[in-house]
Amino acid sequence: MPSTPFRADLSVRLGPLELRNPVITASGTFGYGAEFAGYCDLSRLGAIVVKGLSLEPRLGNPPPRIVETRAGMLNAIGLQNVGVEAFAREKMPFLREVGTPVIANFFGNTVEEYARCAEALDRVEG
Image 1 (cartoon, rainbow, N blue to C red):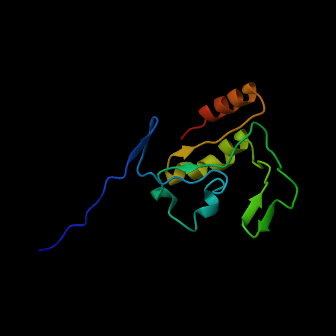
Image 2: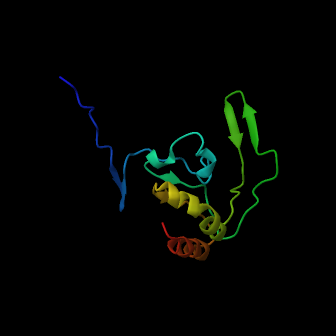
Image 3: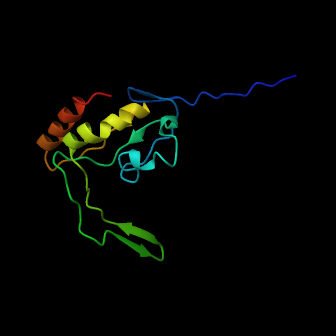
């Protein structure tokens, strides 16, 4: 008697988002997603959480940014990022093609900067 493979429903709700599974990337360590396209099928993830975005681009801290210790590693990248406008223009087209939900992580120095980042990201399709 042939057996049919069991397919578990791993979908989850995260606020208003319906994700196909609970596997989401960690912000910061996964960049903007495209950096890992050669290592895993991004379309199979539940969501991609992009690295932190600011209103304006940031260069981050000067090197050295990472130090190895006996107990592990320390990093101080300094929130380097392309800024919300460049993210929308340069990074989102690729992420749209992948078809996996994108969760934006953004920051600011003032409440107004947070609001402006949110408004800019709200205008991004996908």
